[in-house]
Length: 129
Image (cartoon, rainbow, N blue to C red; front, side, top):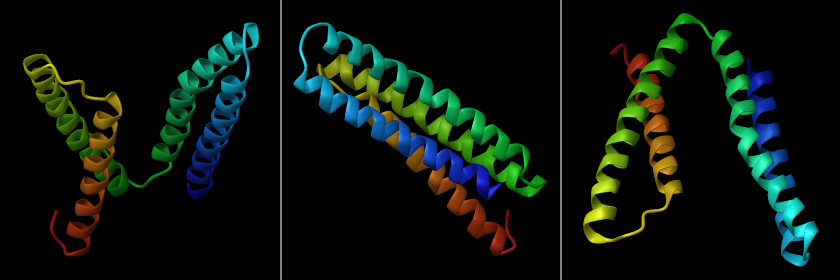
């Protein structure tokens, strides 16, 4: 399973590196080259989550039953927290005319997921579930 996780990390870093290089080249180019690189960036970053999802699903399938349950609980908690934040963000953005960046929802979801995994691991070590 560690082999799959390292493959996910390597894939993500490689895609991010390719994206940064393409963005730098795009910022220095003009005309049709810039259009091509813009489309290339959309393609790379649009497909990347699906590739990562496939690798993570393969890792999930190799986990033992306890680890699968821990991941499911953490994902459930992160999903609920992200949806609550999206609902609150929508109300705040429309009511107060404030623009909230979408990456803030992603960041909150990942933080909630990490907190749930850490809490579940610590609870399991202490004998509590």
